[in-house]
Amino acid sequence: MGALSARPLRTGFSINVSAVPETMAGAKEAESMGFNRIGIWDSPALYREPWVALGAIATATTSVRIGPWVTNPLTRHPAVTAAAMATLDDLAPGRVILGIGTGDSGVYNLGGQAASFAGLANYIAAVRDLITHGEAHWNGARISMAWAAGRSIPIIASAHSTRALRTLAGVADGLVVGLGVHPEIVEQCMEIIGDAAEASGRDPGDLETWWLAPWYLAEDSDAARDAALWRVTAMVHHWPRSHGRGKLLPADLVDRVLELGSHYDMNTHGHPTDEQKLEYAAFARKLGIADYLISRFTFSGTPDDIASQIRASYAAGATNLDCTNPVGHNTLMTGPRVWASKVAPLISDLSHGSRIDRKTDVLQDAGHAKM
Image (tube, rainbow, N blue to C red; front, top):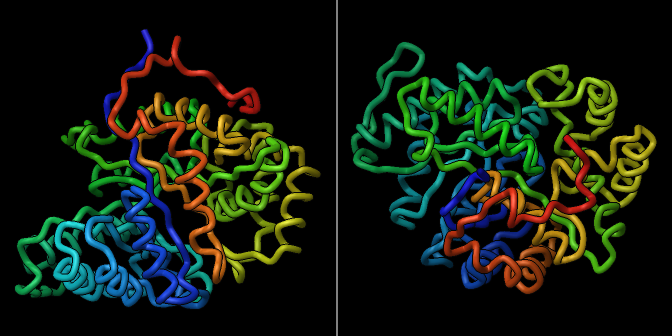
């Protein structure tokens, strides 16, 4: 019997802020298009301050959910993050959502290193206690923030390994899964998340799980897949830090994927030059892993191709898609507009919830490599 899903498909996207007025206008437009969530990257060496930008977005919108996507536990004291969350909640009641990870470009480009999962878990607990109860314990000290108490703001933790899934499913209110959107990967991750949640006494259905889902659309499928190649390099750039452990990688691909990830330049994270994009693409092809990574990590092809891929991932359990496409100044809404006009109409039935039998009703895209 095929697995069934009745949850509505929700979509969001994350951006790097190059100009706050442009971001405000884009958020307002995205809200009118029906996007559920807008996230702001937290990478101060590269982009504008996220909490200031989010305050501006809050005044320009009325319903879309907003928050950092993602911040980290190292560059801000938990009281600073909690105060920012609570203040944003004053501006946009019930719409704030905190995405947080161990730290990537926002930490490494400042000369630091990622936090441990235990450190992230402790930070999440402290922030949650501050916004819920108005007090918390951090590094042996009691923190009081009475004015922020009584709030319920989801904290969604970024997870890019099976270890992260197992650790954070018992701590956070949800997850941002960065291991891929191919149905086989989604199924494996969903099983890990479910087991970890139940082991910690939680209902897996209560977790809000989002999936990083970069997408590339063109009238020619090959052109779309080629355009996605730089992005898959970005998706695996931090995998060498863990030597590829817990990434659900076939053994024969580990060394090649880690070599590709090591080739990524953190100084242009999220906005590489055109020359870098071509270089990343050529290297992925040279290593012989381009098709595998495109199919695992992205929705790429014609509108019909992408709709079919989304349906397959949705049926496997990916019901919240972070359709992120990092862009530069003056091109902020190019991707969301194309998505809203070309892709959204083909999957509109999923936004109301659907019941799909994977064995009979979902067509697998021919371009997807076997995991």
